[in-house]
Image (cartoon, rainbow, N blue to C red; front, side, top):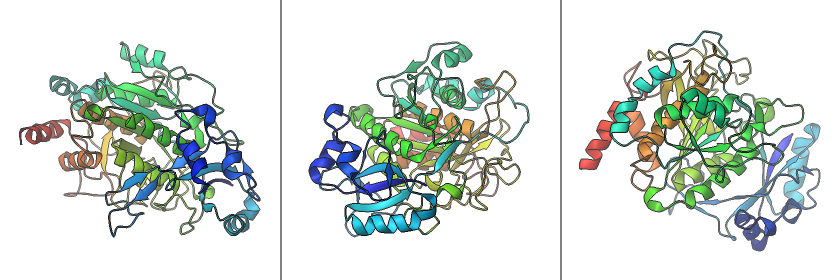
Length: 454
């Protein structure tokens, strides 16, 4: 079983890990952090990742997802994550032994396989991306100066093919290679990966935010032994989020904006510790990745996750959770969980229904999917699944951020705005099929005008 091991080494080692992005040549190695862990085959290609310590308000709970938190990367506060493998038949014994023999080991967590969220259906496209562009009110957004200009939009997926994206859109696209991030062992350069799921996601973000700056983060190209080219490991997403926190911190406060689109998730409890185990991911707000989501939100990023394609009417064949399939970060209180509707506003049968595991009221909203767009999978194949709905919503968020940086409108305030203005499609108020409803750009623009005039 692949695991993430959390350690609290000496402050000088922690400081070396924290400062590694600025000075890679002097950063701490895996051996510096975790040499001699019994029963663990350490992955020395995975650079140690600093995990900030949540700092709750006085009297607060550091693991609560519904309260403001601060996060500290000070050497005396932060911990460090490394990656390794424990024999499947000895997991419980090895975890117990690590905790007893190494007092610097503070946690052992699941590193589950993560997959893209393509649809299970074979239905033809319903409408085109120009229909989605119209439904997003692209002309009205541009008239308000909301086109994504200057906004960093990170696509965590299988990598982006910039040339294909530009051909399909018929115009140039901005991609920032310097702020992109590639997992160790993955060959390729930002914007030059094979046309696949990540290219579809990148295309779909640009429908609502045509001038946004893409940041390419191909986390799903990392490979587990025997894995496919469309799954990765959650540990690489942990490292990617640590990188993105640095990207955000480097921006001027007056224009600070980062939108993070995640069209992937964990489909099976097979790669996770059982619910209730301290190393569990699906239901555990203390898992390092779930803490990273909170930390990135606190720093000012808008984090979006696909609700998944485990809807009761058309479940993806990989869905192995018997109930409540919106798991882990896809159900995080600090992330916008996105379900899918077609261009008529009707929920697509594969869009996962709540309740979520970390937060019951999931999905938050729905966005458009199953339309002809990127042609990443062929001319006749739709951009589908909540995989397409999520970047469509991310593009709208990036458009808003053009004039409303996080220092003017916090991520939690923007999520509340998206939920409050959504077009209710089912029961009055929230429901587990549509969340609060379908994203409504006109309602959002009107609300922002009122806020600006107040």
